[in-house]
Image (cartoon, rainbow, N blue to C red):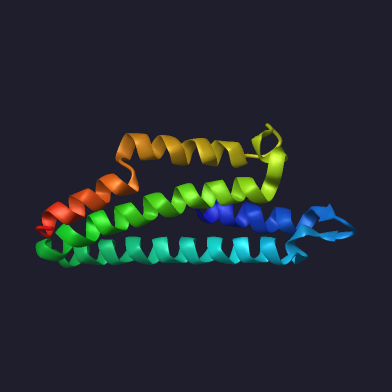
Length: 128
């Protein structure tokens, strides 16, 4: 997700449309800002889950781990999708690695469980 953010910001600053960088347009600025919030929130969720593991608090791990997995899964897929949107059609070409991150995000959902799967795990663990 961090790499998708980095690629999006770099591309938004270098791609010129209508005589100015596309990063100067409000829609792209907001998309990049939302991307940053998703990345930082996912990082915080992962750090919190890691701290729970280090402390050895099993009760907290049982709730925090699926929560972090669900949020990070969503954040990664959405970051890859937003990165693809910012890059436009060139994002699916071999010149840029954007398509690889999008494919990896989708395959990771299939292999490791998507956000709804992890939310269901969390709901079962807290008896909802």
